[in-house]
Length: 304
Image 1: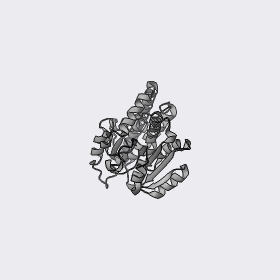
Image 2: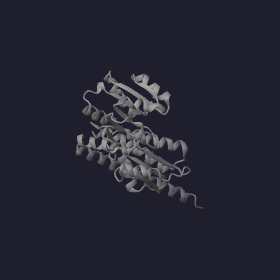
Image 3: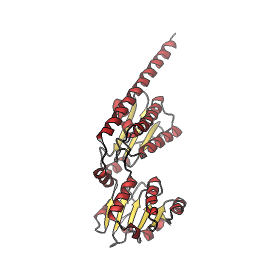
Image 4: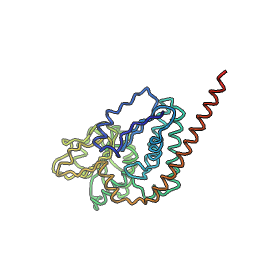
């Protein structure tokens, strides 16, 4: 049987996910697909039949229906990356290959045949929306970004469209920060010199893959008003910083809540997506039954 263990935002808070994800047993020698995003840590392993709940859940994940920001597109790339990484490391069962390949197909079909992703937002878009709402005079602010990835690049594109915004970009690997900074007119700063950057920063955006907090109380100057977006999982910014009067801190949960209050996703499109998922699940069951009949036939032929 195909098994699934998951820790996600539908059942656990951000703090609980951080704590549980660190203890999730993942035997490296066991063939598996490990899906890790800001909203979830899920492990799939085994062979044979796929439980109904597991099949429906993965198809919904691939379609963006289980995301913190419904309809978002990033999960498609994250799911494909997790599957390809597993293929490179492990010998997966035929059922595991079929499960993930059909899940990715289902996600693509849902986005093609419905408007589920029309007007859908990403964490980078929501961050930009909050920025514009908080600082109409953003051109006069200094922005510090820690982390080099698609999320931070999307935010950089918006900021550099403003021409006069001063942006500092830092990363564990300075060469990656320098390359992206050169492309968007930002200033690269070595991560070990982050305090020098933070002394000048009005807005801080963090999105690294560090396994622990990298921004602590002692890193921020006192008395300087700072707006902070922590887009990382686990969190980059020490949560206690939210208690400081000179700091306004948004973490993933707060950013998603902000989006939900401003997002109007038509229920009709969700219903269409769910009908497509049920259709694709039926196709999987047909393949499963056909494969079982073939295996039984082959087994009977081998009996003298």
